[in-house]
Image 1 (cartoon, rainbow, N blue to C red):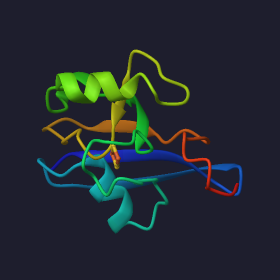
Image 2 (tube, rainbow, N blue to C red):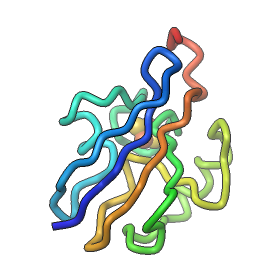
Image 3 (cartoon, protein in one colour):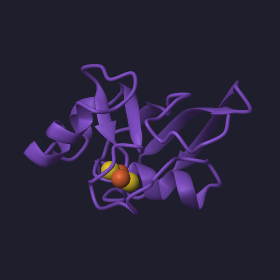
Image 4 (cartoon, rainbow, N blue to C red):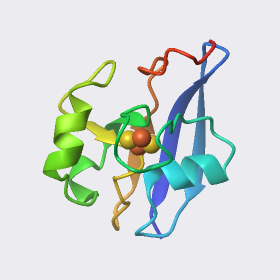
Length: 111
Ligand code: FES
């Protein structure tokens, strides 16, 4: 059973949480079921990029990125080569570390 370590911000303070997960779950679903606030403005339909996250470890163990996800990622705040959309990236068999950036493109969110 893989482990996911989340690095996330709560009131601008960096926090972390380590969780045992089942392979095949999305990063977003794991975050939400563990009370980590992760944006998901399109309700997981790969249409908004607010669920953008950065994979600090285990990037290659995630499900393959689709062309649609790649295109949408271009709109994400703080994009880098290890960026994924939390609603699309499914956890494989290896441990991963995921940072949820402090900002998203969701302009209605209050920080
Ligand atoms: Fe909108 Fe993931 S929730 S792209």
